[in-house]
Length: 122
Image (tube, rainbow, N blue to C red):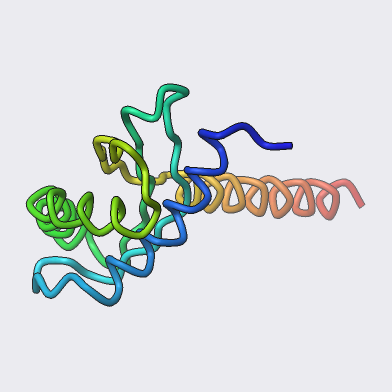
């Protein structure tokens, strides 16, 4: 059975995705996907990992919009999840997709080089 912080994190991930997509009207906030939420054991802080569709400027603008909307988002989370104290939110970019893409590119490059070396030998 999952511990309380894990259950809260899973519920927060679901609710945050809904709040960001449907409730926030800030034009700076782009297409955001909440990829993960990590909540401390004492439920005082939550790190919200996000991806944003677009370039670095769009990512930066989205982060600024989310930072400004933290109070509203925390209020919404508190009403939806009903915790005694809603965790303090910290937003961070999830770079795992970027790393995965780079690794995939490197693996393809290695495979191509190996194929070329094999052809040279034959």
